[in-house]
Image (cartoon, rainbow, N blue to C red; front, side, top):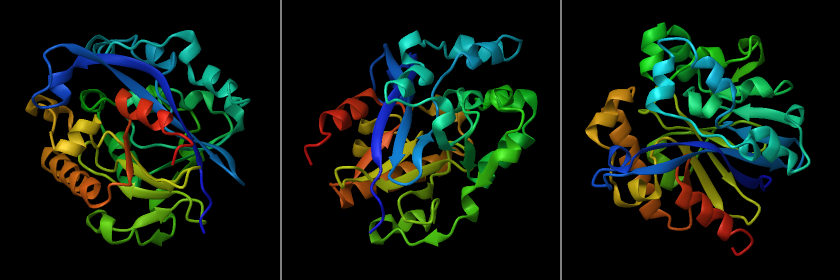
Length: 284
């Protein structure tokens, strides 16, 4: 039996967008999109992160022009008490205690805190890393990537999820192909969720309450999107790596949720999903 992971969803800063941009048919008013980092406590390996959310490094990385455009288009709010460092401290952890940081994809609101993780190894899918490293300055910026957020020794500390052993994900996940067993014990299976970026990495696990969980990053931006199969505005497709592939991944999530009502699907920017998950903690 694979180990269960204790899951804590940390809202590490937020930005604001018009809801209709992120959800077709949504309201014409701005709403908060939290940047959720996931603290995973492994019974043997200790503290693991899935993304980091925002950090003050974002402000520094978007000070020059044209990177400043990123800050103007997605203004970041990060109260001191909401920083990753402060939230980890609430669990008795320092950034150096984080064993591994799993990177869903290389957009700034998911990796802004990597420089604080001085002792962690990093894990990502190869296609996403290649796209980030090969992008031009303007091309990367258009796709939401800020290489200045990476630690100077990032590549030396990086492992590719693709190199981990492949595991069958079961009938319900057949459309997603096989997973990659990141720790060799079945506790965390990397699942490719392409479209938003070339190699966005989702994560399948069982939590402390024995619930099956899929961390789906930006494969959708809200629970309503996957439940009701409501994609974002076509304008949002301008920042997607592959709009058609994004739509197929969203369709697969919709079908997966319908096939397995007990599966918990957690997007990285949905406050309702975060609050509902925390509310149900211990009630399963």
